[in-house]
Length: 145
Ligand SMILES: [Zn+2]
Image (cartoon, rainbow, N blue to C red; front, side, top):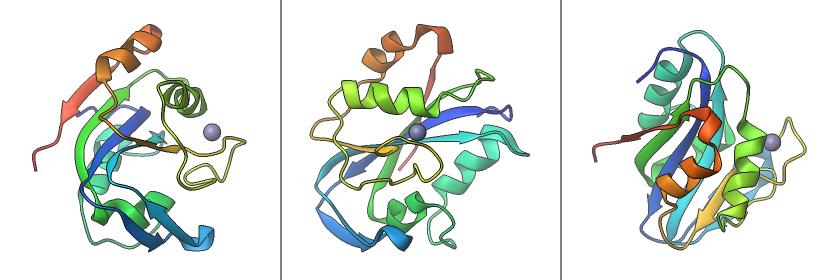
C-alpha cells in the first residue's frame, strides 16, 4: 500500500442484513450484498496508515464507517494517488454504477453528497469503475480474510 496521499474506496461483502447506530445519523439498516465507501487520506501517513486503520476491527468510532465496519468483511481497496481530492466525484460514479444509498449523509458530513457509502446487490466491478476514471490510474488491492 502507498504511503502517499490519495482517495480510496473500501469494498465490503455483507453476508447478512444488520442494523446499527451510526453516531448522530441514528439507526441504519444495511441489506446483505456488497457495500462501497469512499474516503480520502491527505494527512500524515497517507493511504497506508488510513487503510491499516480501516482493516483493524474493534476500535474507537471516529468516522461513520467505523460504526458498521465490524459487521462486514473488507474484501478490496481501490485507490489513487491523484493529488486532487476525488471523493465526491467517485461517489457520483458509484451511484452511476448502480449503487444505492442506505444511509443519508453517511461519510458525507462535510460536503453536499447524499452519501459516500453505497450498497450493491452484486459486487461492484473494479474494471468498470476504473474505466470511468482513467485519469486516476486506479489500483486495486485484495484484502486477505
Ligand atoms: Zn461528497
